[in-house]
Image 1 (cartoon, rainbow, N blue to C red):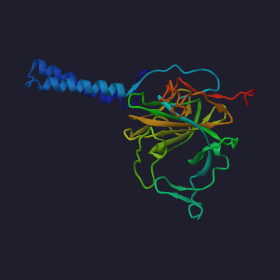
Image 2: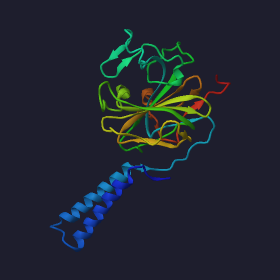
Image 3: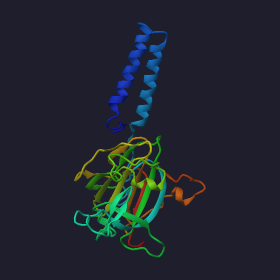
Length: 286
C-alpha cells in the first residue's frame, strides 16, 4: 500500500505536530518576536523532507513469467559477467596456509564453492574474459540509488529467502563507507541475501551502504516467502544494490553507465518492482 515506509510514520507525524503546535501558539498566544512561528515553519519543512525521504509508492509489477525486476530505484552502474574465484573459509579451513588475507575484507579461501550458483556463502568474483565463459558464471547488475530515489527495495522474483547475513569490513563494527557510486564500495557494510526462486534458480541480492547511507533495514527474514516486487527492506539515503543471477539462464538489455551511451550517460534509470532487468533465456536462444 502506498504511503510511508516502516519507521517513517512516527518522525513525520512528530515534526508535523510540532510545527502545527508552534504555529498555533505563535498566532494565538505569544509569537516571541516571531521565533515560535519560524520554529513551526522549520518543523513543517523538516516533515515534508522526511515524508519525501520515507515515501513508498505502489508500483505496477510485471506479470510476464520468468522475468526479474529491479530490486532498487536508481541508475544502472554496470552489468558484467563474472565467475567465482574464492569464498569465505569454513572453521576447519581457517588454519590452512592457503588462505588469502585482505586488510579490509578479511580472510578468503582461494577456491569457489563446489556449486557457485548456490551462493551458500559470500564469494569473491572476477570479470570473465571473452571466450572463457562457463555454465557457473553470473551476471552482476549494480544499481546506484541517489538520495532523491525511493529507498525501499523489492524482491526481483517470487520465491523464498534461503539466507540473509550482515557483513562489515574486517574487524569493524560498522563500515567501511566508500561512496556507493564507486566499484570499490562492493565491500562496504552490506546485507547479503540468497533467494531461491519458484523456478528453482537462486539469485544473490546485496544491499550496500554508501558514504551517506549507513543504515540497512531488512523487512524480511530467512525462510520467508516472497512475491515478485514485494518490499524486502530499505537503505537510508544514497546507496547501492547488486543483483547476481546465473548467466546460463538469464540475459539483460539494460543500458548501464559503463556502456557510455550518449543518451544515457548515467545509465538507464530503473524502478524497483517495475523495470524488468533480466529475462529468461529460451530454448531457442540457448
